[in-house]
Image: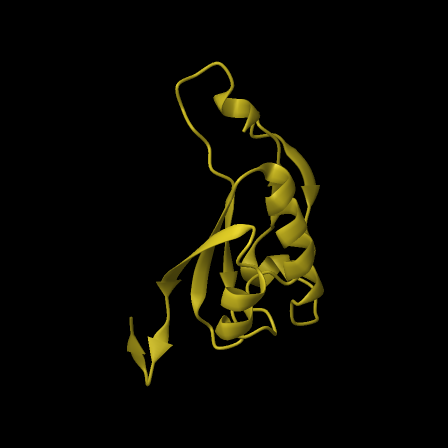
Length: 109
């Protein structure tokens, strides 16, 4: 959000989360603090394992100047252990959910 300071741009904090069923949902938040709180929840519900940078690439944490500040070693390529129903009902007070992509009976929706 710091990158947009002093401009007419409006930044909406958000993240993509993959459910246990591999549905991809987008969470939009009112502020960065809510997004960071959700990030902590996501991290607690990721499948175990570490990222293999040779297989999946580096997961760089960058600042507003596009400078690398850290490397995230969590296995972010997979989903979480929570179902779509759990995500959509448990966090309704702080987030707007948008279904981005899912596959039903082998058909991409």
